[in-house]
Length: 361
Image (cartoon, rainbow, N blue to C red; front, side, top):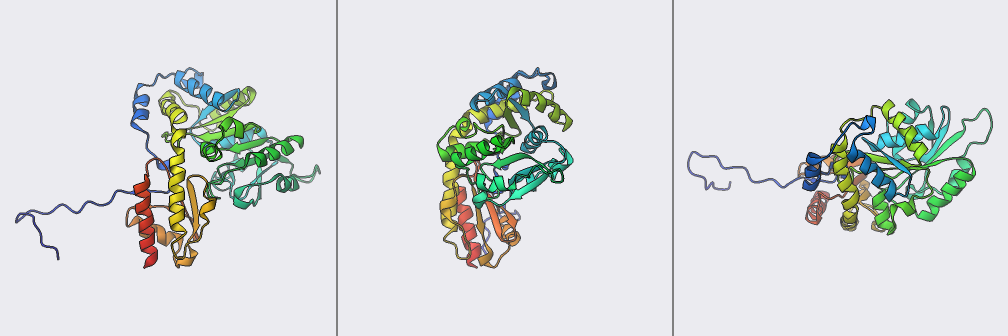
């Protein structure tokens, strides 16, 4: 046992534990000091009356960045997606989406409960659908078949590992759907990550979608909030749906103030998160028993197969948590980690070293 150097009768403080490296999601980010100051000083009003000046500025700026007529602030990405589904569809219709889509797997069947629609899920390689696959799933106009009401895409695709839609693929789907009389909604929760990966502005890569939802509270670092953009008539109708879902807020400019900083300043640093994700992917690919292709890691999400280690994702998560490294499993064989502004390269290196040590035992 190590000899104590503490004076007789005094208890030594425990050794300092390593800080937590939280790679569960980019939703765990904390607002920056600049965001906190802006929140404290925000000019506010009643947004249900349309009188919150900070909300109004954020919505106007988001619309301008996306080249749209209007935008609406909502508390969450789920609410934004579900408002879009409600507005684009009618009860008894189908929504075509990729089978790992967030709207299908992680939004509590709200498309059924709120909009009376069911999903028509399709598998896409790396989470990316093509028009050739989509058009085969559009329901024929027969009275005994549920008609297709909407096509939905997700970029970056969360559960497919942060993959990005090539603009030409997304635009072909939009063109084909529009020719078939169908609207297309984009779950662009991390669309700024996609824009950085593609080296193109968000307005360019989303221009043919009828509506786009994007989050401020993930890689952009704001504490709360998403926006839904579209034409003026669509956004006017969205306000009614937002109220129905309990999303009408009062002095919400406190949140919008942080969101404005997230929107204006934080996209510029997303490339750092992408580089850290690739660093982790390169290291993980060398760990015996772990399978992934680092070349497919384009943004800030890494999904890897750990079945060759003999551990389940739950076991690896538990053992990592014991060493203050947090990440979650997707299923017993797949793990997901997400880089963000609160995890720097040194923290990523410690997480990688911890995984290597656990897998070596």
